[in-house]
Length: 359
Image 1: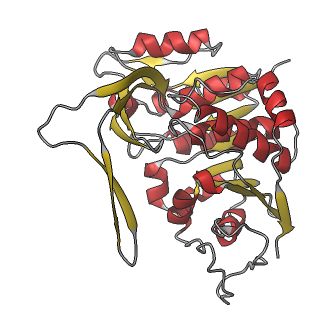
Image 2 (image 1 turned 180 degrees about the vertical axis):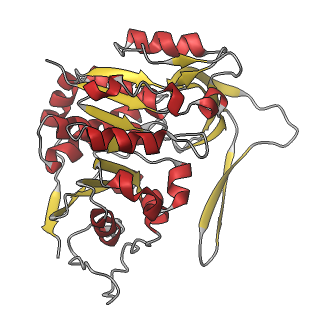
């Protein structure tokens, strides 16, 4: 029998635009390094490519889990405009949409993505119907049937979904939770989310989010000096010279009861831990067309492996290859792998995952 996975969070309609002429401006000072995409002010800019796709954390992960063979449910809200397109896409992907809500008071969340010649992007995001998605839209009585819940970014400030989710998990300990916190949750800091973290099986964030969430800085690559205020010290040769040390951040999450912590860092690879060992996984390739959705792809790939009983080494490979496939296309969903595609890539690409015991 297929495992039931419910994804909770946002849905968007995305339009990718690649301008013919654009520049990237970069400024660096002693504390920061920032980049801006530049277009001619007041001019008419030719567009080389336009792609209409779908996004949003809950829809991306729902499609990812559906392709991996799970019984995936989407729980979120769409609006009057583009909403039918989003729902039809989910249906075509085999996602159950019986709990998708629709509002006529607002448009579906919409993003215009400006892609650069380097493969990065700037997102112009309109929150739309996601701003009206809250606890009353979640079928809590039906969620008792879930094997796993994947909790994605929430747009609405002060949403009550997380509090009600904690109540559900306390009453139903058999349900496993994977969580990818969003901006509103991260700004609140780790102590605010103690109750939810205690019930989190898999926590996935990128490096900057993890540092902001815990208020603990990562150690910059090449600058791994011993510091008595840190609990964990890694041998200098464990991580490659380009990878920052996030071990102390990992340690903080385990204090709150998380079972698996995953911290991604784009081209610099990913790190994960179960509190006993720290694992590092490099990327398989630096080639990319568009990076939007890479985090959701990694999260659904990693979580799929854990659900299937695989170890962390295999889970990191699942996440890495799923993300690699997604960044090879425009949009957050086109490149999401099914199980057969994942198995083929695992055979054809040799990814070396290293690990070390945590002190």
